[in-house]
Image (cartoon, rainbow, N blue to C red):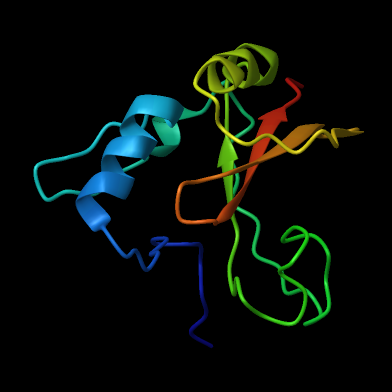
Length: 130
């Protein structure tokens, strides 16, 4: 049987795509390619051997997408794997980026949440090395 083998892309709507792209470059260090998007290769995983993509559905009344997003104003949330969560959060705080004070840790990594200029809640994940 044919099946899905992974996530091939993440696509967001934006009121101002150029400005929002510039924000992601400046504050999250995403490198844009000539076509205007980013390509993350599995060789980019930090720490090594932690590369994975999770796909999951949440109930429509989830609070995981942040306050004010229950029942649907934000239909998707992106989880970005990061190399140093504490350092990135310090950089984001210095840039006056809205940071949710909630932090979570699990046996597979540490999590934090921020909001981009268009109100999209973003999950940041620092995986634990094996």
